[in-house]
Structure formats: structure tokens, C-alpha cells
Amino acid sequence: MMEIKVVSSNNNQLLKRKEVEFRIEQGIQTKTPARLEVKRVLAAELKVGEERVFVQKMRTLTGTNTTIGSANIYENADQAKLVEPQHILKRNSPPEKQKEEAT
Image 1 (cartoon, one colour):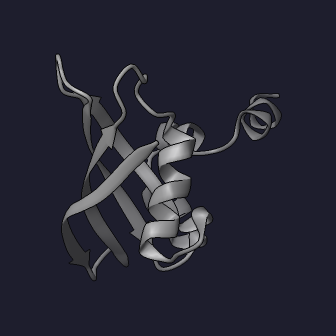
Image 2 (tube, rainbow, N blue to C red):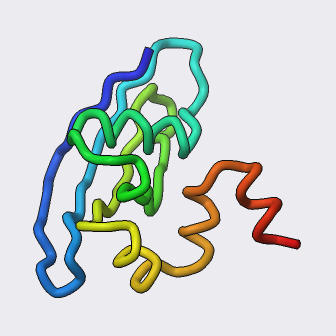
């Protein structure tokens, strides 16, 4: 079971997004959570749709069960497609969708 906590939040009106720093405490003997799982839990925590949440980076602190990271929550998914780099869009889409885009 992972516990996610929003550490800081900043509204960026120019890019129409909220920039969030988060911290995850995962249980003992568990691996770093998957990006899509973090995206789902973060969307539920912030009460927004998953299509508006884009996890930028995640890093597990050495020797701990703590992961820190950052994410952007957009006003709508179309705005995200205009602003986010292509590799971040791919990382935040399900594997089936990634294969379709590659072909």
C-alpha cells in the first residue's frame, strides 16, 4: 500500500496548470510504484481526471521506502498536449496506447 502526500503546489496561470511536488511512502519490501499507478492515485487525491495529470519525474531516495516526484495538472487535456514534451506524453499513456502511436 502506498501513501501519497502533496508537499507543495503552485498555480501556473500562463501555462494553465497546477505544478505539484509529491512524496510517496511505500511499504517495506515494495518496489518503486509505476508511473501510471502514481498518476491514478494522484488524480484521485486531487479529485481531477486522470487525463489531466502528467507525472514529470519520480525518484526513490537511496536506502529508503520514500519516492519524491513532480507532476503537472492541467485545466484540460488539450492544453497538456500543447505544452508537455512528447516523451512525457508517451510515459503517461497506457502501454497499449504507446504501441498504437509508435506504428
